[in-house]
Image 1: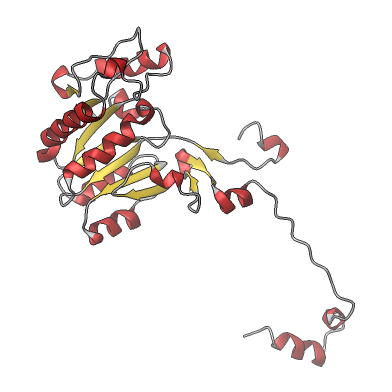
Image 2 (image 1 turned 180 degrees about the vertical axis):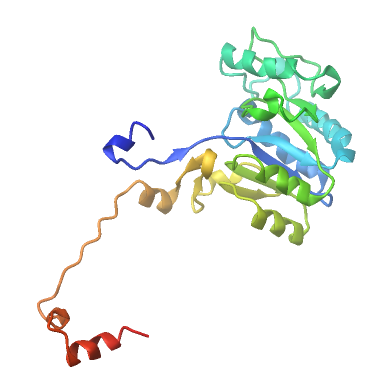
Length: 265
């Protein structure tokens, strides 16, 4: 934006952020974990719309962690040699995320496999972190790695306030069946996009605009919307030979007033 501003060049920015997941009490937790872990394991969490943290009732934390471990056993067996699982992009990124984890008390860190992170291979299997402090680096920065914090809430308004107190996310994910609660979340939060009972897939729909708002970006693209976003629509007016423009010239009188009365209500 700074480089473009002196030239008055328009800019579209698709940025990242901490995209939250709200799991409602009436959600099918097994199905929710299946979709959330799919999105978090995709490219080892190194996508701009990866679920960054999960808001759910504390009573479901242990069950969520257990289901996540079962999901890993099913989908990524023998993860050290599994070509379906991505490694962290470089050593600097690995060290950054590991430092985040080193700040967290060990009893809050739950590995989803028996394999521990290895800086030599840059393999980092998904890790669940239960209730990290909100001022921790893990909760202050975009994680961009397969680490998933679980944050508890008691009432839905707490979860909504938690999201609204932070920079607007690129994506917001909601799992549940209550239309009333889903509508409340949608109407009381601001985000680049929303997925209901799904993760990430809204970004693959070319009929939907994709982009952020506030800290997560400016503008949206995809399909026709993207074509219009990246084009300058030049308006052109052609005046026909026979027109009434002379009626709008002074001196103004009865004819002008009658003409203008057609446009004034």
